[in-house]
Length: 392
Image (spheres, helix red, strand yellow):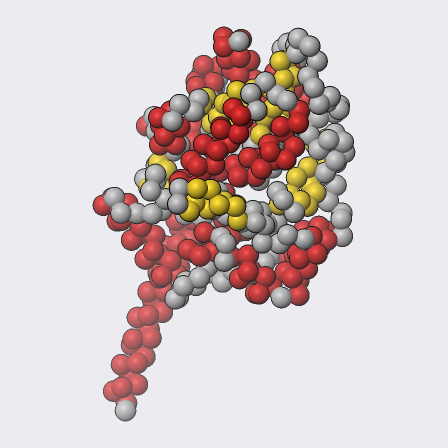
């Protein structure tokens, strides 16, 4: 009995050392930005709960709940430095449904890089483009934290009726993750944006709409009254919940670390289903296939309305650093796939190479975060303005 007890203690000690070493390795990888920082047991943070209470109380001054989109801009919403008009478009003025004669109307859809997070309305690339030519009108339908799925739905719900001649479909490298995500904290735990969204899935090569798991505003009360039950309901439709927060032993550091290294090995062997393998999107992943299909359907929908669709690839800070280092582009496989389908796209990395040459990457981004500074937006505006001039 004594020998058995000693053996048990030794096994327990070895196991504790393995878990401790795994925990320290994970924290190191997180500190280097090599893996996403997340809790081992998922729970809503105090910030998440505070935001949910504010949402239920209607205290958000700029973002409004939407049963169809998840969220959108509040009509007439204002929160420094942002201002939305009464049509829910980021602008200081109202737009007629029909563009005036002699005016080229462009509508832009996408996430925070289209919306212009962390700069005033006048410093967004849309406003800067319009200042270059009074005959040019660029409507900013961007919404922070949007996936390309929500952008597509927003175009069909609100954008079509403004009859744009050209439709910009904005895409940033991490948007591929949002195509299979319905609750942002599952993807990025440190976000202060705990709202749910609809998504799409693919069945028999067709896009299948997966509705918002919380289709009514009052449903958010479930997070306050039955957090675990609400998380499981929302998580059942979320790729990141299924892969990171469910399954045997998912909460153990050793299990998570083993998954990371196994996925690296599978990636080298060409068997990985991870969203990113090496420094590139994995064309076999669910996220890639869903994203590609949404962009394809978005493209077709714009053409059907008689407008010209253009997919814009917005490089983030990390994209620029990697590209400067070895010339790689994480979204290159998606651009190649779109090109094969004759879907026209513009890589705005070219804009920064052309108009930002010789300047440090930090100049293109705000000090407060990862979004473009006024200069970064100006470079995008100049490049797109020149592109439209050359192709008009």
